[in-house]
Image (cartoon, rainbow, N blue to C red):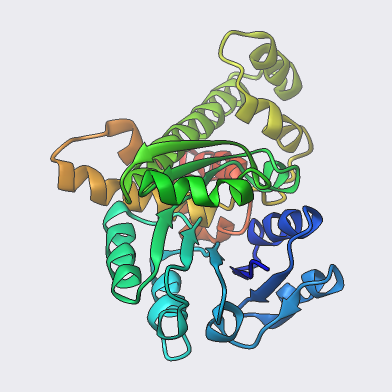
Length: 291
């Protein structure tokens, strides 16, 4: 029987792992904060004490972590996966990291006898719960195809962009667009408010217009209620736009909108809004635009 390990049960990892369990897969699960993995134990998963314990003997190991440093600790730390990796096991990294980090993790995985697949996702908590994510894959085509039966239980589409690192580049590209669109909505709301317009009327106007997006429709109720429960944390958008800035410098290109959005999200994170949904970036714009 195929053994599957899942590492990381945060906002995204928990519902994604649950979807694999619902599809009939047994999981061995690790999360640094153990209590956050406990709901999966009630669903039938085996909760393990260390990454190495979760991954020992596993054929497929899925990672869903917040940043590259956390991935490196799980892979190569004192109780990491690579020292106990089954030959030809697949490490499927669904975390959002930089392309160069993905290539380095692929190298380490290969040296340990495993196969690395770069597979970050586009979508937030709602699509994760509904298995409607878009999976952005990078790696050997045969390796991606070997993982596809499981990826199909997590998302509505898996797009293969090329070698390892290409999936991470695709994720940064789509998150650039997400960040800029959300900041654009925030700036429109700020201008409308300062012009004395009713917020709900402005929101209806956007919904009825050619510039409405799935992102906007998904966030609209947050603006109405002025409440921002996290689907995509501001702190993570700030992190991703920072990674994007690094890649832009490496490529020798300027991305003015990305730079502006990166500064806004970073400021929002520093000012204590990091745990709010990205829609709350408009609160940062309101604060910085006073006067």
